[in-house]
Image 1 (cartoon, helix red, strand yellow):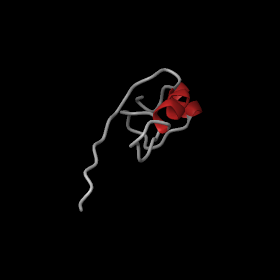
Image 2: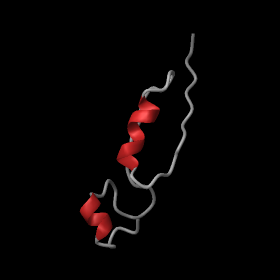
Image 3: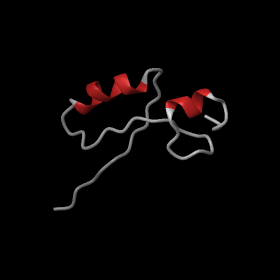
Length: 55
């Protein structure tokens, strides 16, 4: 029996606060929060605030 997965991307101001509500939903396999876009991979909060990452 093969599993079928789908990907959803959501935007939210305080993204770390959005993990728990989705993480508790039935059928959710993984929840990851972070920044999208920009040219710096996996930037920190301070890097994004410096306006040098394109986020």
